[in-house]
Each structure stands twice: as structure tokens, then as C-alpha cells.
Image (cartoon, rainbow, N blue to C red):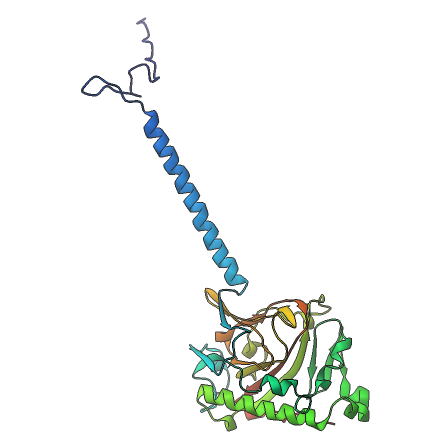
Amino acid sequence: MAPQRRAAPRGPESGGTAAGPDRGGRRHSRYPQETRWRWLKVAFLLSSVAVGSLLSWSYLSAEDGVTEVLARHSENLQDKFIEIPCSEDYDSHKRFEGCTPRKCGRGVTDVVITREELNNEKTFSCSFFLLFCFLSQASILDLHSGALSLGKHFVNLYRYFGDKIQDIFTEEDFALYRDVRQRIQQRIAQAFGISSASMYLTKPTFFSRINNTEAKTTHDEYWHPHVDKVTYGSFDYTSLLYLSDYTEDFGGGRFVFMDAGSNKTIEPRAGRVSFFTSGSENLHRVEKVHWGTRYAITISFTCNPDHGIGDPVLM
């Protein structure tokens, strides 16, 4: 049997492949080169982690609705309007030329009703919220039907109080509501280039009160994303009048448009009106309120006269 050859040692001292001689007979160690590669790998891994963290932060920021603020609480906006492409939601409903949205978008204004008007007892009564003061969870009050959410039930205020309802509400309250509704309707018509006469108030139209109390029913879970045209088929234009101030009266509770790849937020301000076309182009939600109480009025319009309702009246 032929004798086996002994393997040559591979250490740096062997003169083998780990370090070869140069022309001058000197040998080069492989260690400096390996060290450089090792540091390059570490740098690459660290940069990958940093990029991944940045992308995750951007995604979470978008999920939290902080990507872009369309209207800050500190701003006093004359008019701000952003046009966006319409969704196909309106195609599944009867169209009314000169009203059904062909121009879609969202707007914000602080001049429909002034803060001074809101704070003036002669022009704005706090009667709408006297009952809310005794409720601990999110609540809504529909002026047309008199329905007030109370825990797991709805109470009809008009039936419950009967003639004494006039001790809670006054004709001035309803007159102011009609005046504000007309101002908002005209502002929406102007922004979308339609006639206000082609728009009809539709239901539900309601006051809302939300705080950080745990929801008792699904009616109290106001924070879920939704599309008004899908939830309420009659809606074509939606508006909200805010009656309290973000960061002063409550924390959280911002209005969030959930656009593809980013969120756009509106910070409520007493007297501020936000309005938008009601289709899927304006998917939205409200952030959970962390502290305090957020008040707002939702007033919506339809182009279909069959779905129109009259202004509420004191019964």
C-alpha cells in the first residue's frame, strides 16, 4: 500500500494558501482582508436594520394617522379644498345630474360659524348637551327622531318628556340648527360646483358625544373605518361641525381620512366644518378619545329627493 501523504498545515505560518509569497518573497496575512469583510458585513446588517426600522415606523405612523395634518387646531382656515378622484360607489345608485358627485374631494373651513357665535349664549344654546352630561359612554342624539343612545338602549326623548321637552330645547335652538345647516349646505354646493337647491338633508343627522369610556355596545365603537355611502346609501355629501377643541377639551379624537399609503387628519376646532363626498374615495375613521369629551354634529345631504327629510322641529 502506498504511504499516505500528510496534509500540509494551513496556518499562516505554513506558507500555504492562507498567505502566498509576493515577488519579493514577503508573505501577506489574510487577517486584515477578512477583518475588512467582517466589518462590511456588520455595516450592511446595521444599515438593513435601520432601513427596516424606518419603513416600519413610517407604516405605523400612517396607521396612526399622523402622516399629514390637513387642518391643525391652531389654524384659522378660510377655505381649504382638496379634489380627489371619485370612487365607483355612485354608479350603483340612481344619478341626479347637477348633484350626484362627479367632482369628489374634501374640504375644511372655519368661517361657516364663528367661535364667537358658538360662545354666545344668545345664538347657541348648550341645551343639546345637558342630557349628555349624565352619560358615561359615547352617545348620539338624533334631533329628527329624538333618539338618544343610552347604554345598550335608545330612548326617545320626545316621547319620554312629552310636553316638557320644551323645557330642554327651545325654538331658538332649532332655528340656529336650521341656519347652520343652510350655511353648510351652501358651502358644500359652492365647493363642488352644484346648486344647493339640488341637495336634500338626509338622515341620520345627529349630535355626538364621545369620551374615553369603554364602549358598551357596537353603537359606541365610533373608531372603526367606514364609508358613509356604504353605511348609509342615501349619503352623497357628509359634513361635521365640531363643537369642542382638540388638545384643549379632549385628547385623541382626530378625524382621519385613510388614503392609500398615507393618512390625512383633521384636528377638531370649535366652529370648524369639515365636509367631503360620501363614497369610498373618503374612507375614514375617528381616533379614540384618550381624555376629555369631544362634541360634534354630523349633517349629511342626498341628491335623491325621495331620501330627503325636513329640518327638525320642536314637538
